[in-house]
Length: 392
Figure 1 (cartoon, rainbow, N blue to C red):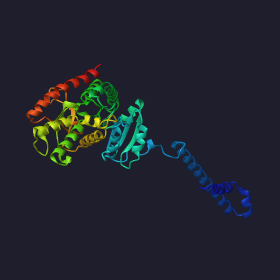
Figure 2 (cartoon, rainbow, N blue to C red):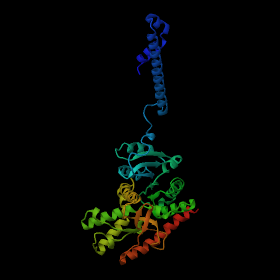
Figure 3 (tube, rainbow, N blue to C red):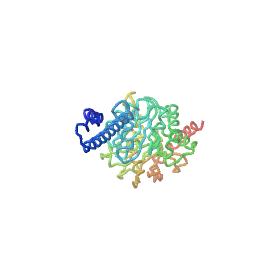
Figure 4 (cartoon, one colour):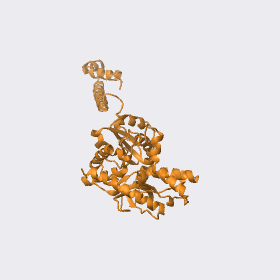
């Protein structure tokens, strides 16, 4: 209602009844004036009420007329799952976050880190895809980042540098993983956890011990991400065979470091055969793919982009499993009875509860059987190292 209208109503309200009626001299006019005054008062009260509502709304919205970003579309823009990335501002975390923002199965994407997460969140939130993005910074916001999540992906930690082994990373990354897993146990114990932080052969046992101590351990829901080994194997084998890597499937078992990475080249799909020289070349290159990238970057980083791609490929498989898709199979480092070791990477069938089924190794040739023994020896030491750290 305009100011001029309100002023007119006030003027009508203030007119003395006796003045109007004295000019008219008719009772009908007097009654009419009563009606006009009554209507004027009613309209005025409505206008004042509307004005008060507008003022109250403005107060609730804050001093600025712009809605706070955190309150926009708070329930998500699309049907799907809630995913948190812990370590989202790092070399793996940033491309991983971008690729997860594109994934149509993601409705809400939480980005957590101890530094720089607001900037990454602002950047990625501008992408015109369905997932709503929220950022969380430092330890005090970890609980908010984790509450209600369906899938938690952990790339947090320091990267490998030239000359550094995965064991060199242990003392730093082990503590980071323990802290984050304590948060998961408290805030989203039913979430499926994809653990990327190296050394995976040790950090997965650490996570398991943390969950056991909290009384929330479900072996199906803890998955060490070894998909990068599979991605590399598919690529390198395709190069040798002259095929499209998307048409190749190489099972990679064991662990996620050096000789613990065992590609089963006898089980490649499509079926094929390799010379002893090709087998040796491919096995060594797959096992040392990470070192190849570290050296090529000459101190400027490790395998961040291909790791982010592999992590998203595995996360997508997990989300399809949660959705109830049938026959979703991928390799992962999990609680296992395939060997005498408590953890081992093999193919698993993914479902609503995580790794619903852990597959056996299948037939191995002589070269693979020898490689398996080497892998188990080193893997046993790495697993025990993680367990001992967690139990201190």
